[in-house]
Image (cartoon, rainbow, N blue to C red; front, side, top):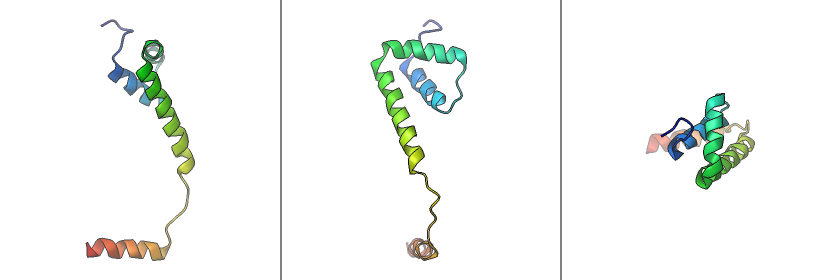
Length: 79
């Protein structure tokens, strides 16, 4: 296997690493080359981006009320 030819397993790892913003130039180049020939990994990259984008919007600062906390605590103690 040449340096620029990576497996799909490595490509999906690099896609995940890229989403976290921690990918070096060499890995970025090899990933781009792989994505140029592998439609399944391109799809994985699209789906990962979609998930990341949509989960950022679902995080809210809402907190549970004391009543709900107490009901959860009671349910856990009774089980």
